[in-house]
Image (cartoon, rainbow, N blue to C red; front, side):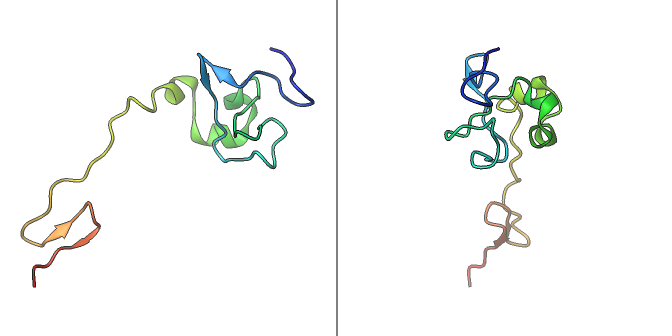
Amino acid sequence: MYKIGDAFETDGMRDGQPIYCTVNAYGDCPYCDQCNICHIADPIEDCDDFDAFWDSWEEYDNVDTEEVWEPEEVDLETGFNPYEGEYDYDC
């Protein structure tokens, strides 16, 4: 680890990918740069906001591989369209 500027502990990268601040604290946190990249050595251990979103680095790394929930097709009997979140009426 190295120090960039006054507060940065790392270059803000993990496994070649930037670590973005989970709460967009670029104006409030001294470890967050203007591009919203987190420069804390271990945000999961040292940042309460980051820890609120991710329990482990494994969970953080697998976020893009998790299944995305999709609602079932339109219920034809009630006319409720879960994609729109409202009822479809042909009146």
